[in-house]
Image (tube, rainbow, N blue to C red):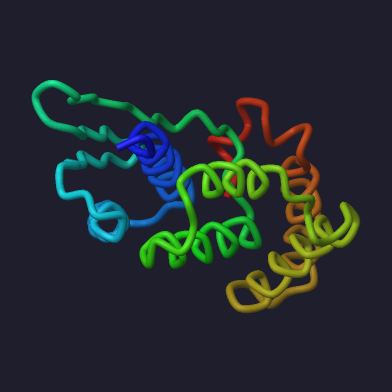
Length: 170
């Protein structure tokens, strides 16, 4: 019973991270149910939306409703999503305490990018070049795609991605 407030917070934050990662609503709901059952709780209800979730827990005298909204402007990277789902898998087996899980979620959100800026921008250029070769295999189309890939790569760098541009970037 002492862990209940931490479990509530952990479930809200892990669910919010799953929403931000773009997981499906049904998958998030099923996963959160498995997590709370692993911790021996069956008094949690979830209402998951594409932009956040509501978590209701407890009985009449200890009931709480918590909200997690999509506060993250920049979407998590693949390496962060991978670390998140490693944590989710351990939480489904109750192999991590809620307090340790909360600390690990904070660490995941602060993970440094695995590649440098130049490599990330070049990656966008190569990706768009490949798509251009599939769609419009001309020298002009290739050059335009590479230029657009560089622009998108630059716009997705951390300082710029946190601006309102995050909503229009792929």
